[in-house]
Length: 219
Picture 1 (cartoon, rainbow, N blue to C red):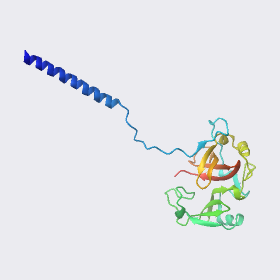
Picture 2 (picture 1 turned 30 degrees about the horizontal axis):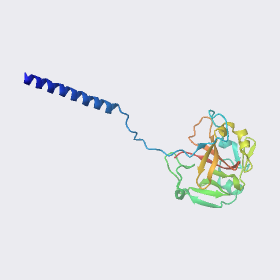
Picture 3 (picture 1 turned 135 degrees about the vertical axis):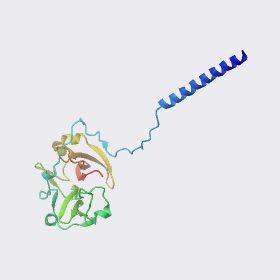
Picture 4 (picture 1 turned 120 degrees about the vertical axis):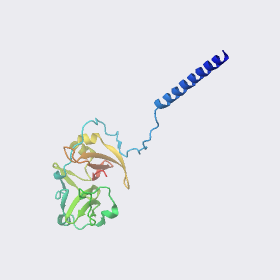
């Protein structure tokens, strides 16, 4: 009889212990796992609440074929046209020295001409490979301007002027902390209607006036 009681007690204890262990394991399995994702830095582009409106409409397109720098040059032109219209570059620097993560004339296989360089003129930046030149950045503060859809965009162009041309983009205006320039208002334009390009065009505003623009492409 004693042996039977001890056996029953042992069996009951083992059953309770097993049930407790299964319960703990079950709770541990169902407990949410800690995230292993890296904490990415907050984006430097922030919404600018000084311009109100809906943000659910796509930004407008600024087609490179529809602009002219200083009323004469499209985005892509020759080195001869550069010298004729803009004059000799103020300075230049090899792309291999600057080390941009994306270039304009890079080949589809990733090849970049070792002689490729940036040309600097009046604060604006151009990429140059052999006879080819393309605009990378236009600095309006030193006199350069562009024409687009019959309008002239210059250092006198206000945010209100830009809103007439790009109402959706201005509704989505943000603020970007630009290295060496501080915090500037920025509006982003698409490069093409079908969104083939992964890049976009940034127009930066300083003290209420158009400051500079750049063609941006992801690395």
